[in-house]
Amino acid sequence: MEVKDPILYGNYYHIYNRGNNGIDVFFDNDSYYHFLRLYAKYIEPVVETYAWCLLKNHFHVLVRIKDEAEINSEELSYTTTEKPKIINPSRQFSHLFNAYTQAINKRHNRTGCLFENVFERKLVSSERYFQQLIFYIHNNPVHHGFVKQMSLYPWSSYGTIISDKPTRLKREEVIEQFGDVENFIFYHNQQQNLNGIQDLIIE
Image 1 (cartoon, rainbow, N blue to C red):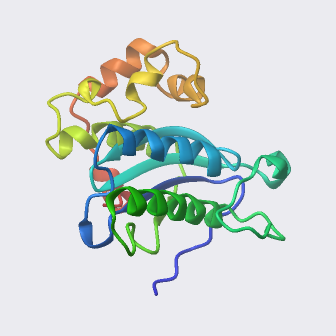
Image 2 (cartoon, rainbow, N blue to C red):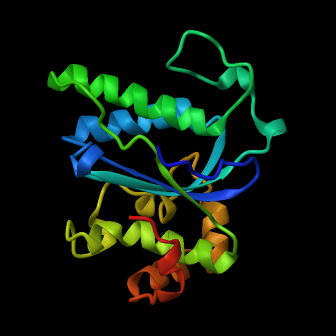
């Protein structure tokens, strides 16, 4: 099994996973909603989320792993009955994948793995990378031909960021990277050159 660098407290990461052997992992609106509910349950206690996108056979998120002192262990959920001795952000993602797989397998009368065993993660090390990554994540549905413009795709954080509805997403911090909402929209409506982060894109 491939060994990935550990996820460390306080760092920003681009995290990505896809269906095992490229299979679909989202089948209908209910499955998208259920994944987001489980994300809130297992992942939000240990991360701050800046951008996300769910597509039929994969997903992307941009997160900051909270510092250990920021994590309230009473908020944590697990798919195991035994409470872990230490808080492990990587394991929380495993709990998410396990819980979602169990639900999908039960609903669709299937067995076996749904996601790839080892999820991808890239350390976000600069503001430029952070900004371009937000565009890349929101543009993913356009890149894959699901929609003509990213604002039409319902399963990403783009619509949340340009709205004023209550959200746990770190909306203000994202907007700050672009100056204001108008510049955020303008930037996303332009064709961005992502050559500088090609080696940091995981897909």
